[in-house]
Image (cartoon, rainbow, N blue to C red; front, side, top):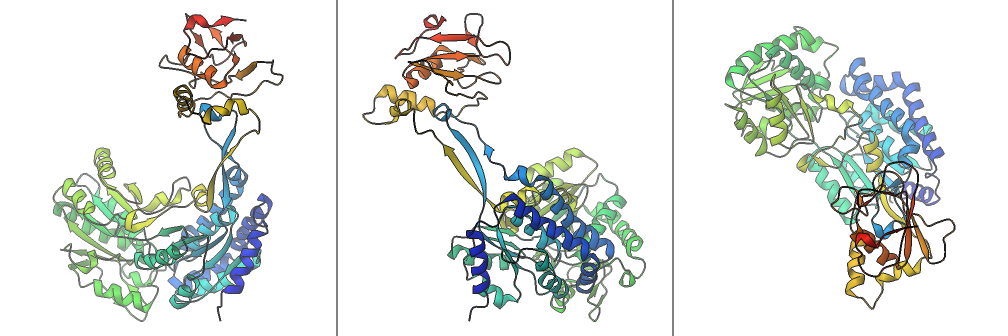
Length: 554
């Protein structure tokens, strides 16, 4: 028996009914999410502490507050995001309405990970609900305490005809992926990402994959070692290093390494004390499986800081490795723990070459007092995100998209980008049923003249004018109302002037005479001013391109 069939059917029927589309419904769901966070803050903090030994500070900053900010932003901007987006038009469509409509995909699946089990569940959920979708949330079974809260408490705050939480491990997730969804959002490692993408391909389901990778951190000789050490140590050890955008390894010269290692030791001692295991500010590894994997990486290179571990407590000390080779296991996989290898390079160019011969990372960091060095790293590499002279602070900006590139992922979200990710951007053009004489130029039998005019009319041009039919058109005339700034649509290469060649093409397209309102006489030409009194100029109907002298004033 399929354990998911009834749930998915219920959600699909709700979406087809149109229940999720009104702004009022979406607003209510987002407010429900906000109440969930406010009313269950202590419960969530306790669950995060039990799963990952997260301090109240880390839980607030990286889980609860950041999720609340996403909700607040969506609530403030929901109706603006939902509005049809008008687009520019060519001459052939000036009388039409052209716009992009943001419509929900339908039934969405969100597969969230264990390392930030609240943030990485609610973050995409905000975008999916704001976009008007029905949602199935599958939280990670590894962070079991947070999973329990999401499964038992969260649905009480949302419309359960449009939202469901499903549970299970890899086997259950595999069965879930056999079903057809309209969009799948996955956060996890690249290996599972490939499985998700393969399953989605069977139904041609679009996906966003937020994956990981080895994030390089280049440290230039021209910088303050202690400042760099403070920032690198903090972001490397945040959430016990179990962060997909954490600096994964350092590239620096041997000379900088000699200064950086004692600075890192100083920073780690100030942050976590002489005995980091007893510090309330250092998290723990999520499971025995991950602990054993990390302890195996401690044998790579040479340990110069830390290296201690406690299996019973799932504790790995903040550790720095030197004499690391590119072929070592610690340099072949994403570490996802408080271990920082240092790899020596002799120059900035060598560091850039090292980065570029590996897979594109989710994040990349460069430290230097020289802005030119930072800009060179930015210009000559590729990554999902980039930050100069700090760690993953770019994630705090909802105005920046968060996502990977290449093996570190595809697609992005955060803020409005989340809404756009979960919205189908539908291209729309609405045309009046009349004006057949104008549009008849498209029909056979074709002539060279009609082809020239049609091609001109379909050219993509920047024009801020709006062409509208007259409210009371005179027989045999069509009015063209030019509003706003200079009419580039009818301009040739004369810098905004109404050139006779394009006027003639417009006349030929309309097949009749017209008046251009909002024009004034210039030095031997006709121009469109940004403002001023309207002056009407009438042009006789011509079938050929006309010289300037063919224009008369009415």
